[in-house]
Length: 400
Image 1 (cartoon, one colour):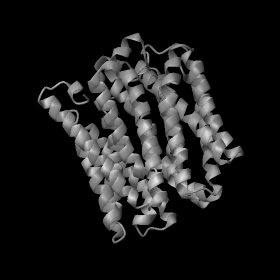
Image 2 (cartoon, rainbow, N blue to C red):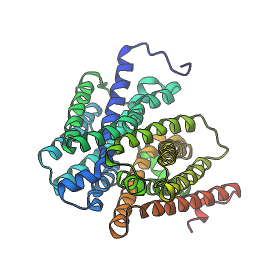
Image 3 (spheres, rainbow, N blue to C red):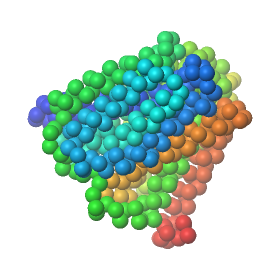
Image 4 (tube, rainbow, N blue to C red):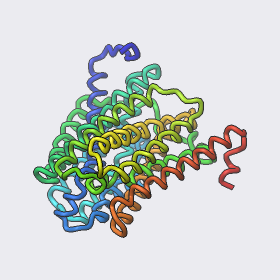
C-alpha cells in the first residue's frame, strides 16, 4: 500500500479502473475460446485443429496489422481513435453471434487481433500519463488487473457458460461488457493526446540493434512454446488426466489462480541478469507439461498441483517478457512494448498452428512433448545470449 500514490482527482482512479475493465474485456475475448474449443468445434462441425485457427487468426491480426494500426494513434485524435477501435472490437463480437459461420468468425477474429495492440497500447500510455512517471509501475499494475482477472475469472467463466449453455452466450456477454467500457471511455477518457507517444522517428534505430532483435526472437519462441499446448489446454487436460468435461472450468480457475501467485512472485524477485527469469521459467514450464503428460492420468491431486505450477509460470512469463524488453530498449520502451506485443502474438499464432497440426496428425497428448521441445530450444537460445553477454561478445556474432 505504501507504493501507491495518493490520487487527488477522483476521476483519475475511475479512469484507471475503466481501463482495467476494458483490458479484462479484450483479453478475455482473445483467450476465451481456449476454454471451449472442443464445444465450438463440435457445434460448427469442424476439427479441433481447425477450431484452433480462431486463436491463430486473432494472433496473426495482432502481429500483422497491430503495429500499423498502433502507429496511426499519432495521426488521429487519440480519444476518437480509441473509441473507434474499441467499438469495432466489440462489434466483431456481435458479428460472431449473429453469423456463427467458420469463415465469418475467422475474419472477425483477425480484425479484433489487429485492434488489440492499439487498445492495450493506449491503455498503458494513458495510465502512465495520468499517474506520472514516479508512479508508472503502480498505474500499469492497476490496469493490468484486467489481464489477471481475465485469466482467473474471464476465461474459466467463459468455459462454464459454453459447456453449460452455449458458446455464443459468452460473446453476447462480452459484447455487453464492451458496450459498458465504451460508455466509460466517452465520459472519462481525456480529450487531449497522451504526452507519451507510442512511436516516433527516434525509435527507428531500435530496429537495427541486433540485441533488441534477438530479444524479440526470444519472446516469439517463448510464446510459441507456451501456446502450443495452452491453446488446446481443455482437450489436453481431458486427454492426459481422468477429469470430466464438467471439471474444465474449475481447473482453469486453479490455473488462473496460480497465475496470480506467479505474477506476484516474479514481481518481487530479483535476478543478476535479465535472461535468468526466462531460462528458469522455461525449465519449470518444461517440467510441468512433461510431468502432466506422463503421470497426470494416475493421480488427480498431483495433476492439480502440476497444473497450478504450469499456471504460475504462464502468467509470470507475460511479466518477464515485458520487463526484459523494456530493459533492453531503455529510452524506447513504448515502441518496444508495441513491437513485443506483435511478436508475442506471432508466437501465439505459430504455437496454435503447430499444436493443432500435431493434435490432428498424431494425438492431443503429443503436443505436450512438442511444447517441451520449444521450451528447451528457448532455454538454449537464452543461454547462448547470456553467455555471449558474460563473455562481452557482440550479439551480432550470434546471428552471423
